[in-house]
Image 1 (cartoon, rainbow, N blue to C red):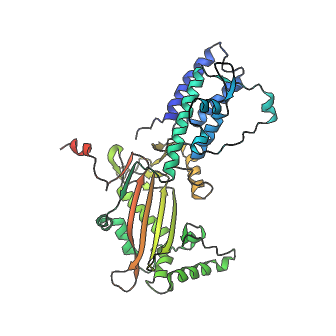
Image 2: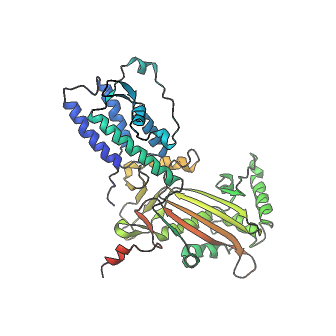
Image 3: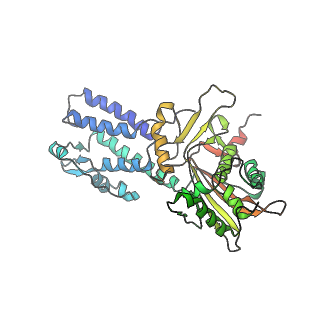
Length: 401
């Protein structure tokens, strides 16, 4: 996959060219000290790391750092960059809902002579372009993180639900008495990744009683007993957590295609998931599932020696970025912070799954099983598509015979 040259990476190239000109020039109109040049250089290096994406929070911080700069107007008046932008009808961070942060300066910073940037300078024009790029990136990334305006979306028809191998396997497996790996829903309830009626169950700190309390909550919700084979409580207890999430993610692997090179078989990586079990007006038990896939990977099954490839979303909220081995640490730590609840909607998912699962009578009529009644996948990048999506007309017209 070719490395996506994002707008921020292009800005970094422009800055490096400008920096060389400033360094060679005897004109010191931009900076009176080397430290000031270094500060601006550090800023551009921070925002324009070629393939290490910025989080939504980092985009917001970068915008506010820019807006705090001092600008010298053509009339020799000093104003903040934020005021200059506002006066010239540019959008600022506050216009897109970013809360203003109080900038704190240390005593040593106050003693230093603060540089200002003239609005007729090449650097200023680059800063305006950078600010506009960051605004656009933040806006789109935030929308995608909230599940809005995906690049593509596929909702399964009833026939497509029946044709899915992964969903069929889930139905078949949930007719067993327990999962093959003996896993249960208990850990998922404790982590609050699974809720009942939208509420987390807090069993307290007494370790010896936690599982019993949670089992009782499941039985009260389902209306029968866990140890009754094929009961509703039995299905919830054995299959209502990680098993259910894993089954839906298999459908992502089976149906997602990397447009470049027409690659299929992508594996979901770090995922933020939530399952809520509830009942409808007819007392039927169902789950609503939301899974946000933050990373995915691909290993060539025909070339065992080739390294695994890892993909994440870029800073612009729409580009799929392939990371090299030495670029993994920062993006993966940011994704794990999202999984652990330290941040929320701070990472753009490359895809999002929404599904509804019902507990229905099994095929023999002697017990219960899971059945998917709704399934939707959203992709936040045009570089990923579903194999179930209608083929684009131009692809049909120009397909080789």
